[in-house]
Amino acid sequence: MDIINVVEAMNGATMSELREQIDMAESTLYKHLNVLLEHGYLMKRDGQYELGFELFHLGEYVKKTVEPYQLINRTITELREEIPEQVEYGVESNGLLVGYIPSTDYNSSLFYDLTEDPRCDVVDYAGSKAHLHTNAIGKAMLAEMSDRRVREIADRYGLAKQAKNTITSIDALLDELTTIRRNGYATTDEEWDDGLREIGMVVAPYDDAIGGFNAFGPLYQVSDERLYEELPEILADTVESLEAEIRARDKDENTG
Image (cartoon, rainbow, N blue to C red; front, side):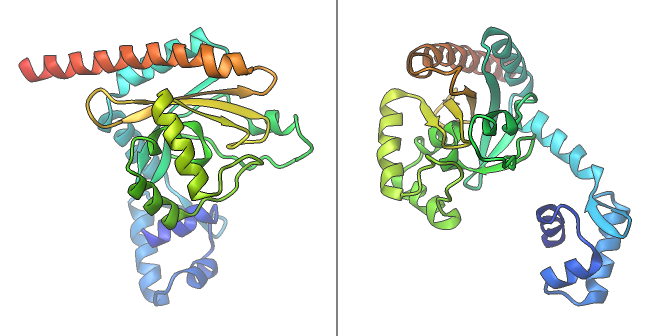
């Protein structure tokens, strides 16, 4: 896994780069690389090792089997037809947010165009990872956890500043989570991306959250009324319907 992680982090790596990053004998590293190539987990182009398509296959399998994918995917489609904001669904894994059904239309340059910052480095795709404190889904998921667990995640990954209003203090984050628990949803205001506002709400058909929806748009589109009144009501209705469908499906499967 170290090899795959390094190749991913470097967006492709040569043999010499892998030797620098991985504490392993060159002969052993070469054997591991050949096994990964043979099974399709890596591929080699122009002297550089890149992630292979077998990982894509495994990722799609996990996405469509671990959660009630069909119900979630249908709900996402319906929600996208109902509102102008972009919509996505994410899950928590090992203290990080993982893109489960991302917004296919998201382009961070749209929001950077609203500022004077030319960067376009926010990545959004199925399987992409993000820190929970930087986005609305993530904060909604943190609100489902104990303060002790939140502190553990913050200690492990830090509270990096991603946009101009990202929360970087554990005390401020815990205060925000108290508000989220009271409201039943989380919001961000230029915390994930400059010029962007989000609302997130978890899906919890039983006791524990299995994931969450996120709706987001640029500042000029998402007003205070939209963010704090209209979208919470729309998402709450969507989540309630989905949770009921999941419970009904599970009941049918258990009695079938």
